[in-house]
Image 1 (cartoon, helix red, strand yellow):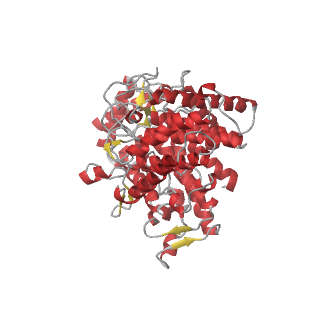
Image 2 (image 1 turned 60 degrees about the vertical axis):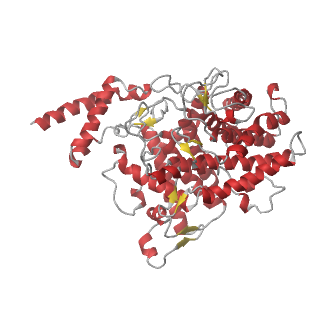
Image 3 (image 1 turned 180 degrees about the horizontal axis):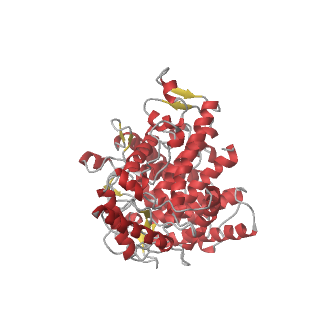
Length: 565
């Protein structure tokens, strides 16, 4: 009888909470009632047996008539406008409008660079007629260009602002991770320095230089003067920072660990690569580009690439995946899985570099590539093993109706968090949750993988190291496997195309998760969604969440428009 009364009480709570669901999701705040509900839900998940708990899995199965295609069409525009909404008139890009519990009302060097790069991709696609040339889009395109130029001006000032990481004179101050939105230094204790910021900022500004070259246009804002000014006064200091500090410890993108990190080293390598190409291209067109600086960029690139491939120990052959922070694996504090490794790959392989730019002084083009491309076995395994962990770790990912076989229809995406050992819940330390940006990133990597296979007409090569990733998507895998240790699916063969189609659906399934847990009316996304209930929590309207989703949709659109997938 006591169990029946408990069920009745919880059912009442569930039904009462469903009435509040839309308001809770819209406002992102965990109200006292919601807090009580979450506590009950977590208690139920820990105390009832499996069959009893299935009764409570209907929480997030709220009827949503919006089709996936309609949602993509809506978010394609909504995410861009949501990023812009988080940019203040003075050019500060706030990480989130949340000012308390947690307070994210600051401008982070990393988040700002990534968000602005998304906006640059938007105006590139507009110029290339991928985005329709309508009056509304034309106005938006002009507005975005103004925002990007204001961002560059804004960062000229921030670079020179004394802060607790150091000064501009010795470049150390460029590693400061965040600033107040009023353009003053953040003067409290924090995980500093963070060495990915200067690299990401230079990558973003160079992407805008590429846009100006494409469109044969110049800076509109007179404060930027000319390209000589931008290259020498803004881009060059960031690259000099990378040259000086590439092998030094710093805090990771999650701002928790002072060490050497895969993500940081990868984006630093990308900055050196782009920096060399563009400064070499402009050496006869602008003043102040000397051969010594070009030589330093190139030599540092090769030294850093060698360390990424070898000395930094990012590859652990026993684990068969990339280790984001090797020092924590050695100490036993973490196992090495982290969505940051996937972010490090997609943030450095957005387009095929060798086709996008021309080269003058590079004789061995292959050696000038960024390692760990999207089809790399360790890259795919890193994502695969993280998914496997979080499919089981987060209650919201449990799907009692999912078959346990190799049928590709049974393989669906799930909500992904940062790393298995995470304890940050968006407010305090307790239990980690899935993040929107992490879940979108999984979809983007899969879309990029398919894009590269098609673009370069590559066979799909399956071996003993990557077969765990691919086997759910290959028809009759076990039958084929018995004849050969390795499987090669010829490009554009029936088996190849069927496998690619299944992979594409798998990428979509991660965006379906984002759709399910975001606000179905406004499209708003917070930082996280609760591992038990699926409702949003943490910083509201996180700028990076919108940027990550738009990037994923962009890659999906490329596949649909170019290859008709």
